[in-house]
Image (cartoon, rainbow, N blue to C red; front, side, top):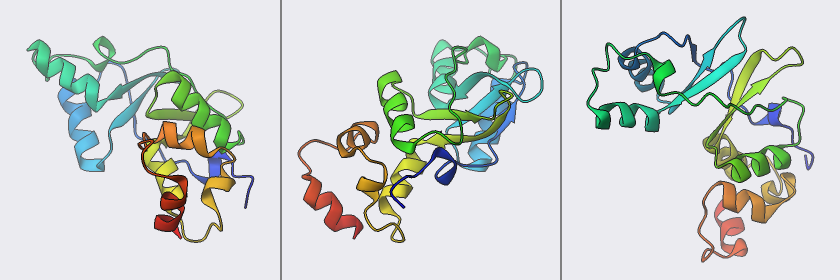
Length: 163
């Protein structure tokens, strides 16, 4: 299983909402689903933005009423996406290079079909059914950076923890 694809690790379905949804409603939905982001969709189910728990904190820090503020005012609008058939290592690199914790997964029509998160990547590393999960994603260094695993933890120690 050395050629893992995004579809092998992504979370589906992803939680979506419209840009006019209030921040309090979005935060409540994330809390109930125990997740840290929602994909804001436009026409069809095409990602138009992403609203994260960090965005919710910004709203609170700004002191604006969460029940009167729409997520469109705080969401990230330059959303990168990935195909479910993309190599998992390439998606991990895309997440690292862009500083993303969440990457919406879209089909050929641009419609959202799931989301890939750092948690999903961590689950792959800890999956006991994969013989060598670090080799499975093809790039240990990139995965370590994406998951923010500290450099002082030797690769052999990580492998011992997951074997």
